[in-house]
Length: 488
Image (cartoon, rainbow, N blue to C red; front, side, top):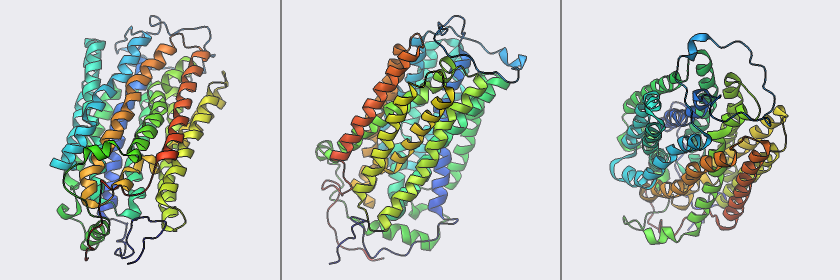
């Protein structure tokens, strides 16, 4: 019996020749799911910029003598955009509003993986994002009714988005050939960074030329268009796709059948919960997200209250870190698959190397940001480098679920559930991070923000070390067993 190659771990040597990528159904799914995650993250982050324009700055206690000098405003704001309501929310209330999304988001992580397995990922993901779109359109009304109503709407948005990653992971289990896995999944999930990159500056421009209410109306309309395309063009798997070529269908199904077969249809919850490989992903995901979500929700506030940027400049500069993150995520996917295909590196080595670089690097530059003072150029550069390096984790621990439970049937049973488990823990930073950060930055001093950055950097480094020690790229015994060869 032939032994697996070192660089591909469990992959068979008899895989069918790849089907062309150009105009293929699998890459079409990657692009459309990228658009879906673009919508999901645009709806998630637009409030971060809108919040700056929703506050009555003269009555919310955000003025401090320690703030850096204000930057040049540029063109004068149009008069007609000042008709939207302003609110007197203090720092604590702002923290709860910004973090409330994640209280709903955590509720549907594990159920999302189970429901995707039982009812199909296409409609679960589609309806989840559609629900978020609907509640986004209701955000201005909720804000007018009071902070409590806005918090409730944001929680419901989180409930809808909570199924997205587990459902998409379950769908890729049926669509992604092993040696294209990193590329396809990173293209798909890169939509998250792209949504952030576009939503932050565009939200600033919308606030500047219209008013903050249009931020939610514009992105809501973009989300409705995505749902229409998703409904018409996507299928749960190659077998049910109406436009897939016979060559591509055979390539995908045979590539996946050549992997290991599942041990049973029963979900081995006990073995899953005792798996150190899974806990390594949990700790890494939690640690990375502490920094990611803290910046995602509070970077516009930092740009405004510390660095003194206007609402128009704020969105543009807040987007730079996530533009770099998106580009590095795409590059990391190509590098990861290339390293594995050359047979020089094992899956575990590739995942750990990218994870450590994508966590320790951001920690160093984030910590340095807190000591740049009012040197806004250096601060923006450090924040951009920090978030950019974080994009490498997309091909590190973020995709490791499909390594430890890779086979087509096992992945359908486990991959979405595994991501639901890890993403549940990784959502906790989004729930508590903004609240803690705003509590620590009550007076918006540089020293307060240094503390926030120090905490985030320390948690990031801890997660990188833990994953390096306990992470693996091997198929876990509870996920699969050796099966008979499949003929394709």
